[in-house]
Image (tube, rainbow, N blue to C red; front, side):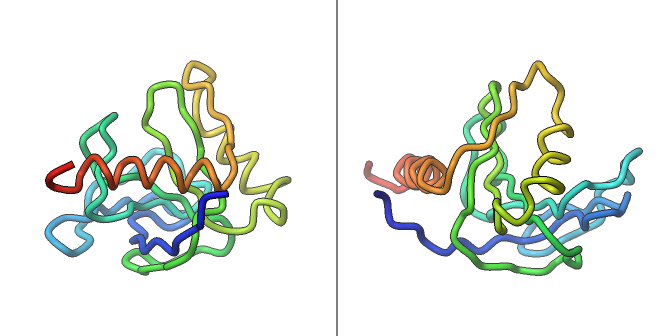
Length: 138
């Protein structure tokens, strides 16, 4: 089993709101207003790039609304695996939120993206692989 490390992220979009922010230059700045409210807290893991889109790895936090700019730190609970490779790291209790947040999160992505939830070990392995790709000299 892969050891699960705590990861620090930053919330860019608060659950239940339309106003979306983005992490740039070490701070969150206004980005745009979305037509639908975020079903979960959405953000990123700064400094770790996803090769699918060249941006910071996307992260979601299940549960209570978190204020934009909050910097939660926790081990990953799972990985939202998408067919296009633009995976999202999930934080929070998957068991506790299986009937609510998790199902809403899956429904947020169209069927063509083939969203599926993988476990914490798969999330950690994916993140570790990304870290190896971005480490100089490897």
